[in-house]
Amino acid sequence: MNARQSFGFAPCLLVATLLCAVAPPASAQAPGTFTGLKVGGDQPIAIESDQLDVDDSKAVATFTGNVSVAQGPTLMKSGKLVVYYIKAAADGAAAPKPAAGAMPGGNNQIDRLEASGKVYIKSEDQVATAETANFDMKTQIAVLDGNVVLTQGENIARGPSLTIHMDTGVAQFSGGRVKMLMAPQSDQPQQ
Image (cartoon, rainbow, N blue to C red; front, top):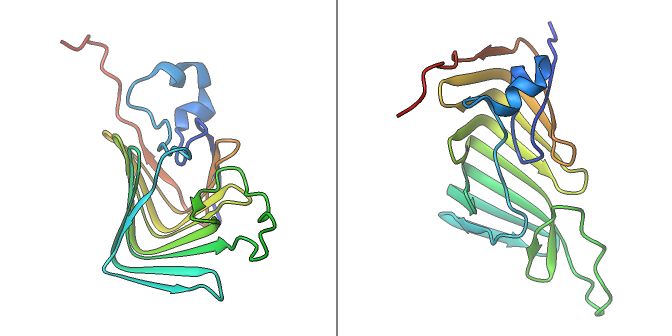
């Protein structure tokens, strides 16, 4: 069975709420709803791993073992991260114009990222986990596959696959049954 559920969210990296699809004005102000994991394309990226293999002839860098990627408030961890990049022209000519959101890597631009091995992404109070995550910088599409779990506080969403259109902020669970648990909002003021 193929179940599909679409969600809209703030144009960040990840995730939306069921409340957005049902009642956007209420969700815009409701604390504790999913609002999207944040990335900042203008902030530096720090990558650490146990090993790095670069094949410049294929424009591929492979980070393996305890991979950690940090950018602003966002942290991603995985067992392996493969970075495909677009090499700058050797003759001094300009490299192809980078896609929106592409990040510079020396004189190169990142084309796409493929993370695998217990992928964990955290930004502030939001966490996403999956078996794999692929980020295409040209199309501005991110796909998390394999037991995707999204959490923010007590709110939890689960599904087989999550596709996020980073440029429009639209996300869609697909590939099977989607489950969501939304914690009730407290009517009492916090002190």
